[in-house]
Image (cartoon, rainbow, N blue to C red; front, side):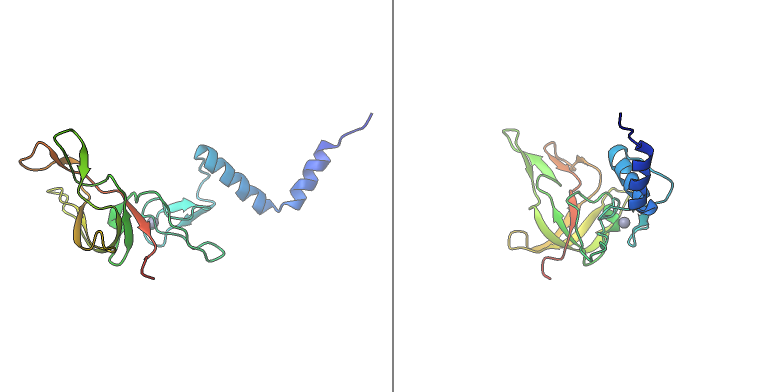
Length: 179
Ligand SMILES: [Zn+2]
């Protein structure tokens, strides 16, 4: 009968994997699978907004700022920005299709005004009292050229209209396409 020294095997594996690497990989597996948070260990802070993010995040979950990877690569998220007020002049964004102000056609079709595509941020309008919040920006392509104001407040009917609505735009942070 062969005796399997399970404990010995495990110990050898643990010796091969450094304690730190083992711990951090366990952490990332747990955090990815169950949203597990273990103190502040394995967290990194966003230089843009200060939000604590997971060690393996490649961009900030709050403002969408990309983190520089160890190999120097920068990856932008495809997810819309959670907090658009973190945008600054010169930041480039993509407006997703079927987002922003819209109206209903007679046949019931929903039509969005804003052309999906790339824009560069000029400034932000933050008027929480009237709810007139938005992004002043310029279109970066032939299709959306010129000055735009993208509504970012809460969804609500437009004044004096039953078929037109203000609705926040879905905005994704992108690399400057002109560089
Ligand atoms: Zn951030």
